[in-house]
Length: 92
View 1: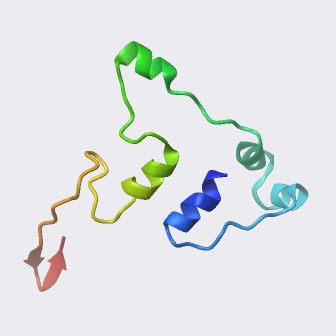
View 2 (view 1 turned 180 degrees about the vertical axis):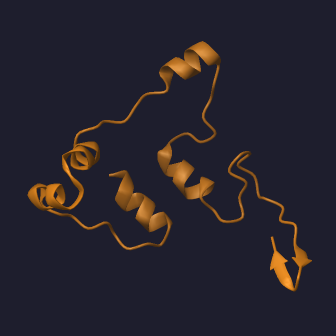
View 3 (view 1 turned 30 degrees about the vertical axis):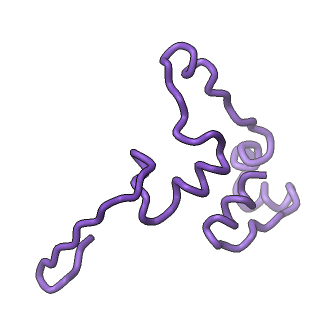
């Protein structure tokens, strides 16, 4: 569910689907298990015990806004870039 959405946000090709038996041959049982059986986690304990609040309401917003190339992922705001030139090369 989230991987196709992430691919769209990144303007990347849709992920390919492989039969489980073929994926096991290619990447092994542990990797296949991680990709097909492990469930997401909840952040309720962090909210309750640490007073933590996520920057975005959900993972869709996090992918959409947190992965923008000119956004500072630490603050969620537009990043200011500093350009400098060293040895004839431009650095951001």
